Image (cartoon, rainbow over all chains, first blue to last red; front, top):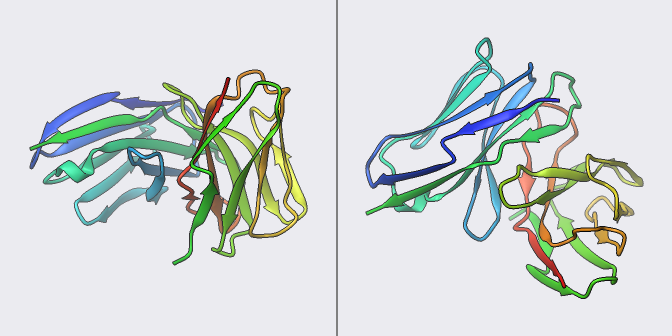
Length: 110
Length: 114
């Protein structure tokens, strides 16, 4: 079974700071997801990637398949970015289930 | 706008009672999932369905049951056999079960059993 580790567990930043959240996994995968969970509990899918880098607005996700590591970057952070960010990986089979990390709680202050 | 609707947002039940959580989607997705979230733990898969009238157990199916009679609906019943039912429950869907399908989540139901 894949083990998914996220770091840091908690992160506090000031508005405007560049933020990095890390995700490491133990075995090969077919895809990695970054999710955002709002304080109310709803989850939004941010990225799904299997190689390289993706960018959407101020968010950038990268993955290094060889090192089994992914990072989520937030540029020019804002208080509305405050949420829990969750990494999830899908195993090597095309229909494998997802394994979720425990999340990184981000608080961005003014 | 298409999406997933979970109801109710908060649910309170007495121990020993069965309770059913609703999940409806209008995204025309084939695959639907139920996850449980507990403090300090990653989401865990309870049941999933790849197509109407078919579903499979996930990692923690004991004490739960589901049905998939319509493509749009995937209700979850938490039975009295579930030893620790108090948790946050999330329903999700994807176009299909395969690796390149992003997940769409509902807003969750927080169940408290006393």
